[in-house]
Image (cartoon, rainbow, N blue to C red):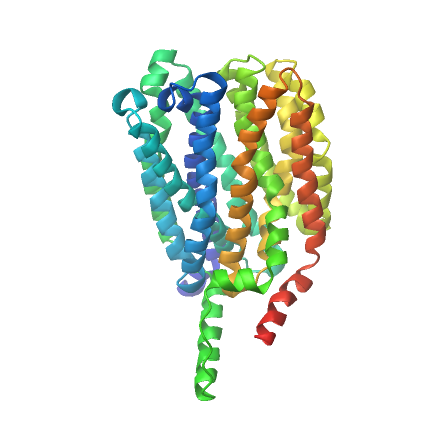
Amino acid sequence: MRGNSATGHQPVRASTAAFVGTMIEWYDFYIYATAAALVFGKLFFPSATGFYGTLAAFGTFAVGFFARPLGGAIFGHIGDKIGRKKSLVITLVMMGTVTVLIGLLPTHASIGVWAPVLLILLRIVQGIAVGGEWGGAVLMAGEHSPDKSKRTFFASFAQLGSPAGLILSMLMFKLVTGLDDEAFLSWGWRVPFLFSAVLLAVGFVIRLSVNESPDFIAEQAAQAARDKADATRRVAKPAQAPLSQVLRGAPGLLALAVGANVLGIAGFYFTNTFMIAYTTQYVGLNRAVILDCLLVVSIMQFFITPLSAYIASRVGNLRFLSAMAFASIFTPYAMFNLVDQGSLTSITLGVGAAVLFMGAYYAVIAGYVSDSFPTRIRYTGISMAYQLSGAIFGGLTPLLGTVLAENFKGQWWPLALLFSAISLLSLVSVLLLGNVGQRTEQFQLKDQQA
């Protein structure tokens, strides 16, 4: 009875662990993004002032995205071969440790060129950790679902960690941005990074309390039975790495999964990273105003996430995702009109309108894409799709937005078109992915042919 009770509580415990773990991981990631928009240009690239300093800071931000596919490949392999839980514990410790080290990093004024070099190296490790964490968190929550029809809802708790991490990062920066400029640039910006040590301890304990994924355990047992049958028939099959199986099994499917993730990733960094730089440098707003706006919007997204997952489970994932992506094509025009009015209310309404549909899309896309891949390579498949999307589109979006804002000063329509293009790409990708059965059959066919 006691064992059954413990097992029965695992779906809730796994969802909680996924939420808390991803909240910590994304908190670490978002405080870097916020610091890149506000202070890294001045502290680590002082010779590159204004536009070029911001561009250099966002360049270090983009480096983390380019490292994320490597993390997806490494920890996807660990998660598919050794276990989801082991992979998640390692990535959490990596992320928390690196974030604290960034908070202790000397600036250019202290050690010269070594400051940006060390910042970039730590950012690469941070990107590798995030690259391996997200897929495992989604799977640990979704694969513990007591009913397959509820997998998207349970997986959304991993997505819930994103707005929660942003809320926490905004609160921390709101505390320190109230300091005068000298104190903020001297030590204030370090506080959010050092606070990660406390979160790391909490997340580590919670993740250790969760059992391994039932789907992974079942797949391991099935693989052992297949290996035994092959040995009996004296058939030797060379072992293939999960990444090789994903790339060779259905590269077209991987490409569509990458495209389907673009809105949730690139759109998010457009509204929550680039808009900080845009409003403070090109609209002339105080940094505290935009941070207050993003805090309110993040709280809204936090509540949107589980509600969206519930609605999608009722109306169908594909129908819901298509509607949200279609609506997102038109929201940037309202957003920029309202943002240019300059008040806290108008900015919050403008950014909130964009995040409403984009956040709803982000809540559901993880569970939808995870069903595209069979269990044995699911960790690698969804990790590579998400992280390649982040590397190509997420990291470059703030950079491209900064270039457009500089070259079209006083005109927001090129930025709105960029957001519309992001939304359209995801809409087309989601529609082409088709239904779950057709997507999974591609892998089964390849296996039979092999």
